[in-house]
Length: 103
Image (spheres, rainbow, N blue to C red):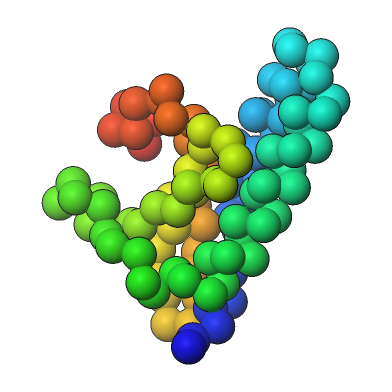
């Protein structure tokens, strides 16, 4: 089985920071923020094992991207493959409109 080298872009780091900020500042929920961070880290580790097995997005304009869901939260990561790398570009909540968010 391939072991993919996972790279997180600045955009996905900003997305994660914004979600954690919301949980900490708006919801005053330190436990939820920590749980999302832990889930993100576990998902990145899982991605290093399964990146090539997940299917491309159905949208023809986004077909270079794939997604992986966080196991315990309503978020998912959008990533692409380049050689031995799985490059995570963005993180979204299930309630976000993907097309609108990527404009």
